[in-house]
Image 1 (cartoon, rainbow, N blue to C red):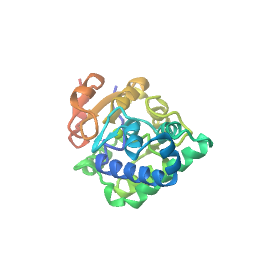
Image 2 (tube, protein in one colour):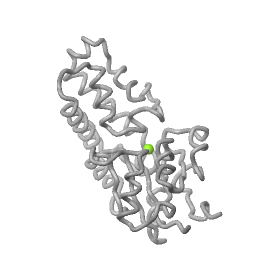
Image 3 (cartoon, helix red, strand yellow):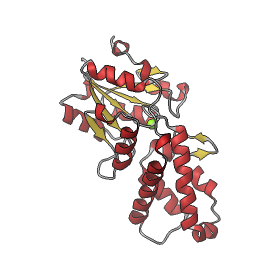
Image 4 (cartoon, rainbow, N blue to C red):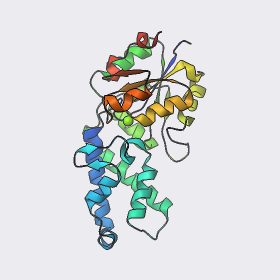
Length: 242
Ligand SMILES: [Mg+2]
């Protein structure tokens, strides 16, 4: 079946991931350790423990960690349990979401499209493909970061995870893209930098292209993809033709 829609993960697939999220996460944890210093002392937790809990080890970001693969609610829940807070998880989750959004907005220069990606998306759009986003990021951060990277107006569909839709790898976001653009899953290619993105494509019945611009290695991604590329910038539709 002919490919008509291209759905992209955002961070590590279209946007530079490491620098930005490392700095943003460090900023969030620093703010947290200020506000919850008593709880941290009581639970004998350091900033390093909080970072490691979401998959950050020094400058290394674990592909399977909460930061790389999960929505921010999962990070909030992990920290909530570590701090043994007696407050409401929901309120804490909102606070964490706001802290991440604030850090992203405070560091706009860290947000950049990966090399060659913008030109490639413009070309694909001119060829008539519908373009969509499927991210585990929040609505506010998604809109802000895509606008900052000057990509926002290229997309026909924006799928984010703001607690109102089941996140990847559940197929809900891909189904949303299909609905909005009148496509069937077999007409869609999912592009992503994580195993979770590829599982998402599989669960929805779409084609899958893995890219190595994010956190996963070739060996990690290959078993789950139809095609693997160094970058979205290298994609040519003929690659999926049989
Ligand atoms: Mg990603």
